[in-house]
Length: 265
Picture 1: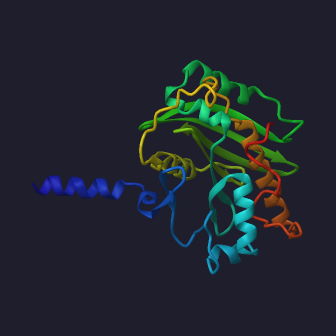
Picture 2 (picture 1 turned 180 degrees about the vertical axis):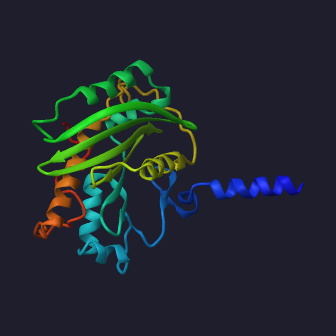
Picture 3 (picture 1 turned 30 degrees about the vertical axis):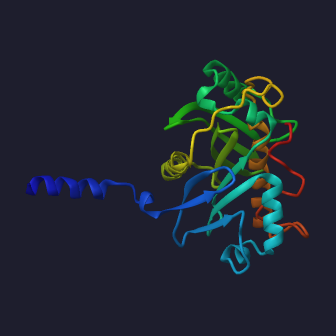
């Protein structure tokens, strides 16, 4: 019995520390919950940010600007380290395409793989200079199936590495992007992105409507390339911060107004 207790204690010591520093958040209209990192190192911004939230002072802006910017880009959550060297952006949105696709886990695997490879092969030099998707894989997570991408954004002398998880479930798209601004992707950041992705839970599994007026086909397209524009915007924003600049009238922590993850690349 004593040996068993010692073994259990050793296993607890080996558990990753990040698992103890996560708190649950909810996205009500999509019917999902997920976990985000906690602790003094992190600043968490949610779509329902309120006056007096420390995040407002961190971004040096006002509540209304934060809410408007997040809404226009479909961003529901932001998590940023105090030193601004790591940033997590979570987009939760729904449109005609995501409703048609409805569920990656039920989609044709060959179509998913072809789409993922197309983003890796695509030349982004014209619309998102410096962006490069370098690898992809399919990641199952309970009822969900993610497309996971690795990549980098190189602008002038700066290099940013990113990990991106994208899925569709119940007609909702979830895109989780973790950016590391020092040109490296530490294992703990990769694990953190995976932990957040695996924490996503929907209240229930819905059945796709058979109404042909609502769902024409089972198209897999999700606009991952368009979502990638957010990555480039964040790197440029990071450079502006380092240079002590801030766009007039715009929250320096969020994409410029008018940039939407649903726009076509």
